Image 1 (tube, rainbow, N blue to C red):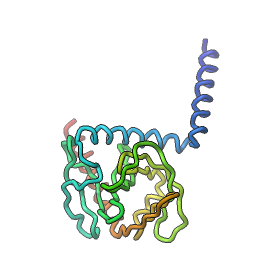
Image 2 (cartoon, rainbow, N blue to C red):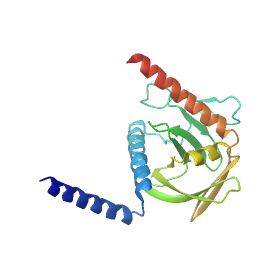
Image 3 (cartoon, rainbow, N blue to C red):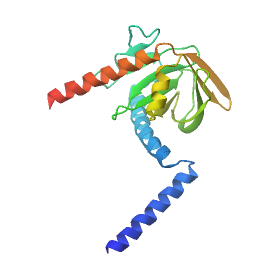
Image 4 (cartoon, rainbow, N blue to C red):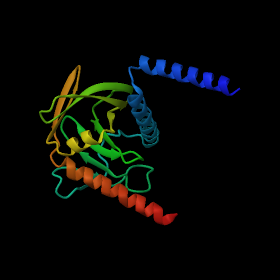
Length: 200
């Protein structure tokens, strides 16, 4: 029975790997995709419940020393502060958030966009660096790109500009202060973890 279960498990793994290859994903990308899908599904539920665009303007307060970056103070149906930093732009609104493991999720969106749902690859250019191929999850008018590479996250924190590049569009935006904004998001998340630990 043990060998049969082993063969069955191997066959199941092979089938999954074949599916992943058809999606153009390697193992690391598959993990990132699954994590982003969970985030996307949660936001989709929020979108359905809340009604208005997720890229529309929520209650905001300035982040000291972070230029035009603002901290989102409230989102519908979330009791605690959401720990999301946001930078509004004429062509794209940029947001920073963390997943439950403390990894960065870079979000780009605009209230005028309508992209449906799904997965997409795009190129992210930080300042004048070579473009990096990124994977994002689409949710109506926002795209969520997981940044699980710590070196990339550190480089992003030093950025002055970001360019979102796809086959039909290239959007460049000034993100001065993004490092301080990211520090504020992480500090907010740390306060939440400490508060939750005290309640246990």
